[in-house]
Image (cartoon, rainbow, N blue to C red; front, side, top):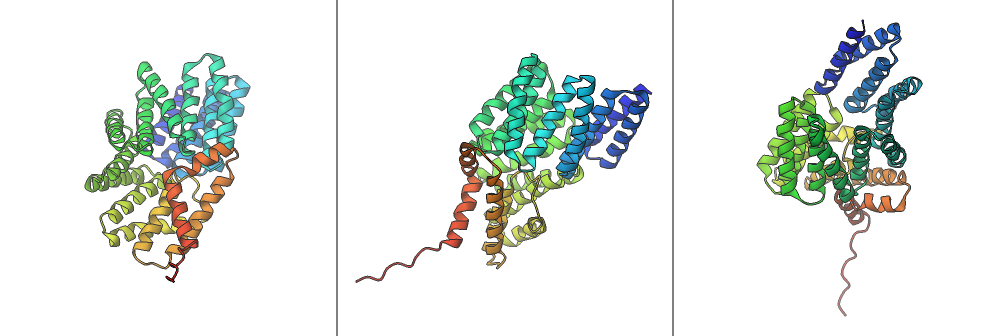
Length: 360
């Protein structure tokens, strides 16, 4: 029965990777039931951890995910399973910052990193550092994010753990894009795609294609960008990651807008508007870019929906900013190019230029 529990956990992990959510949930239920019958606390804790990751990655249900991470944490603490305990805390911090509570996620990680260093466990230390770089990236501290990812990437290569190498390479590509190094971002994204294909990871193929699209777009290679965004969109649809699929659709809209194909851009934007009209964009990786792209497409069409949409975009940005406590981090967050651009568009809307004074 213990082997069956381990097999169920492996099936759950595979299902998480390929997006087979029903199969993954069934496997997790089975693993929890068998683990409880056996009194196998470690397997039960891992099952809750993987269930939480399914909810976090694929459904964006961070509240439900945290319930499972908290359960995994409690079980790990009761059995002194240090690695599962740290992984549970890392996922709790990630679900906090991905739901917009940057300060809470950052506070947890700042405490966790020294704890892992004190344990003398480089694996756990690099895991904590990796999650910390995600927060730095989302808060606009791209220099700090790059330094952290370069460190974790070197460790991934040394220990030969290719999944981590893929993760780090794809994240480094996105950071180089934000730093304005489009050619470097394209090269890293291409490396990430090759690695993701070699290990058979559809999820990270989607990330790599997305980074290729962004880099190609910045280089004005519009055909390549369109192809990359569409590859990313299809993969994310197949692996059932709807929030990340929206990011790919945003890329497609941005390409068509740049090419002057406004009717195609609007068709993509119409897919995004129902999400923007909803109560929240929790889980969307770069919401400001989505808002900004939709606004610019609607404005290009002279669509009367453009001004109220920009007003809601500004409100969303202000609400996110209000959840960042440290002033230095608030400034960093506002320095992100899409955030600056959104604020500039909003100011033009609410503060129209005064007419020139009459001579004499």
